[in-house]
Image (cartoon, rainbow, N blue to C red; front, side, top):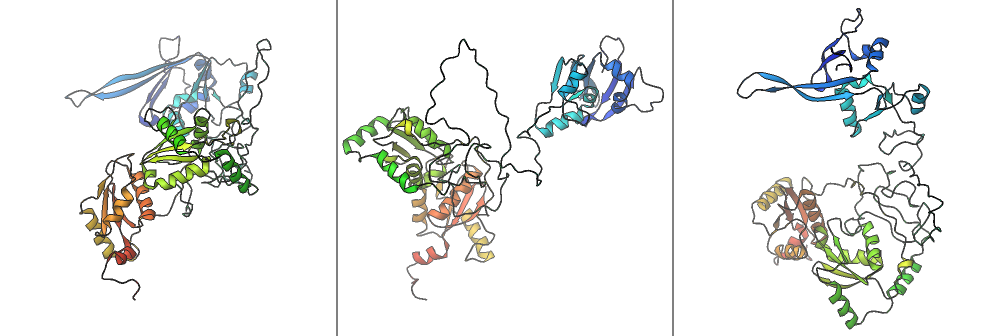
Length: 480
């Protein structure tokens, strides 16, 4: 790292892999230095005075020559660190902005390590010349969302705090009359009169199965800190007990109004059922999500109905999808054809009276649930379970599923196959591992059946003891 303005380098450092210093030479080193390092340089006032004039960083690498065992040295990059450069990094020797002002230090260049904390620490370690720069830290009253939060008794907040955004001051000459606040403009925290618990996905979440663990603390609410008056439990924002569910149903019936006639339904279907409809929402593997409710009301501002195209795992149970769409949005399904739905808003729908739907700012991490496949299936021994798995893997596949496909007929085909077969295999080679397991879980409850193996994106289903007795005409289940 030569000093700027000098012919000979003030510092010549050889840095090997992982930031290990293999050689360091200084032309102004004191005589009592045996093996100089960066810590000694920083502790020397003579060195600091010389470094204030700036320096140049050169990183050298080695590469092998073609066809030879020899290697040559080449320059990877050259970086000029001008006077007045400061490193933004919270080290032990870092000082605040006020301290820099008190020292009359003029910051001309701010060096920031862009990356996660782990990557920034690794960059700092592999580039020890950073120690030659003054270190700056930010004096913040609040903890950042990405800071390391220690679990202590002093921590009371339920959510990581955010810094409020500063409003840009308006010019008095151009300032107009203040806008009239709408019904959706609410002060924080938002209060919603919807009588159900808020979840990320309503149709793909089984409330009967309790998680056994969480991948993130429960205090990290996906609605943001202080933005919702409901407590986040890790999977659900619980509805307040004082919500009047009877009044909600009465209001919903009032908005729907009188049932549509056949002519009115036919007109709406012809207008919105086609694929080129501008009022369409795609429903994917997460099913009926919370933020989708807000999208529905946004479409209902200008359209009487919304076309919903369903793909992926939720199409295994379209009845469940229709139920949650009607219950959570307050609309009415007026058309259903395979995976295409039309959701009607109601005769007396008024966009100004739409419910308050706080949006989720991010998708929360899925909690940890118990294993779906047991080592030994219920009702079988270990050897029988092993034999069933081998038989299923070597049997021809009943169906071959595609990624984000339409699975409306899968349940019926599996039920039909179980009338003659004891084990069924579904080929999910192009579906994906996560969706493959979700399909197995849904089939377990819908058919019903017992998933005994997920391997190489293949689903092996066993019909179970009870279905085996029901399907065998020689066995009378009523006669013990």
